[in-house]
Image (tube, rainbow, N blue to C red; front, side):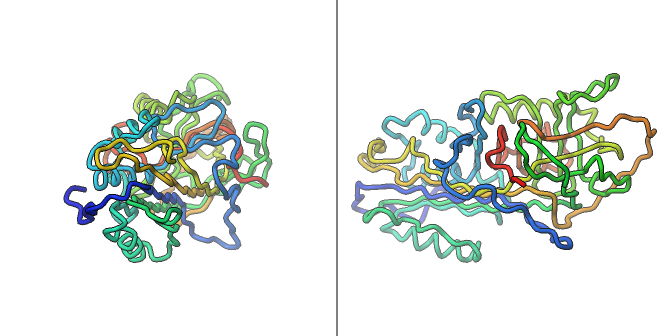
Length: 388
């Protein structure tokens, strides 16, 4: 943001720069009957997790066998820090590869609606902390802020970003009361059950099959890849689930999903038929993470006027929830009578899959979108899935 009103103080205290970030990607629900959302599967710091990593950028290499999570909030705070405090690409001793990835990222506030985020940076001496707290209390009055700028007696600057997104399903899905295993681990799930199928279930109409590798001349195989839009009627955001093979990074996996949707355009208008099954694991977790690879006094900044300063903390909190219910946005039902002998297709997310959230672009096929995502998660194991 050029021309920032937070001017650099005359005396730069060469102690510390703070990047504090909050990301909340939550699905907000219409309560139906005695429905209770699943409890948190995890609430803690990332160093308590054994099978999950938080990455700073989408192009960060993905470790095999791990859940991999990325949220745009850290990038938004970095952008503010780079533009309004440093004034050029950030240079960090012994961490330049990561800094370069963050500096080069094309993720901006354009990935979100204006009312769904807040991002600012500035010098503490010039009142940056007070400004952030005051503006956040107006924009998001129900949000309890972390102690920005606390942790060191003489902080120089602070960058802060917060985003909160709600996606409301137009129709509620069933809670799956049958056994469901994700890679052999019992977890709870939702969707449209094989033993509870209702031909007139309007929840089917909101699911869009964007791609399926099925051979129409062959029986359905559990090895099929598929990509679904769980909430095709929602605006302005969409939730894409893709059961595909992982690539070397989240960025490459998202690109593969987009390519799959383009090659599967013939499936664009296809809906779940009355015999089809859809099952998705419940997710509800909250993780705090320090990007230790770029924070600390052993990784001082190298930019002119900031030499000797360092980042402490470079921090992110992410909360994510996905389950069966949704507030009404748009209701759409598609009921088609088909022969009773047709084999059901099973869109079951019981093995690794990708969750992708981004702006929906009206009138365009998802493969033609130019808007980047704001949340991506590769679900490789059950560590963050809700358990019975």
